[in-house]
Image (tube, rainbow, N blue to C red; front, side, top):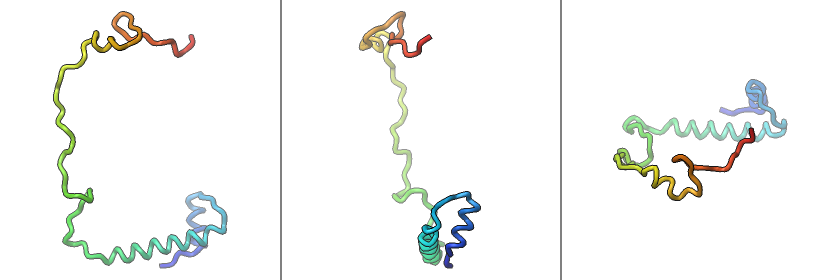
Length: 97
């Protein structure tokens, strides 16, 4: 199948795309090349190939298990802060009132 520059312009109009008319020929050539490659790929026998979602072997959860552990106390969390008031971090005012 060969894509023409006129077809490229027609689809561009439908999709409301704008590009200079000189690039229609280049796009037509590139789209034709893509379609030829897809035609080659469609001839590949894939009946016995199981579907995959990853190029490597099937993988199980590769993340570590979530383990409950004690967090920081309020005093430990506020210890490195430059300023704290009433158990909260004290920061400079960012918004003017």
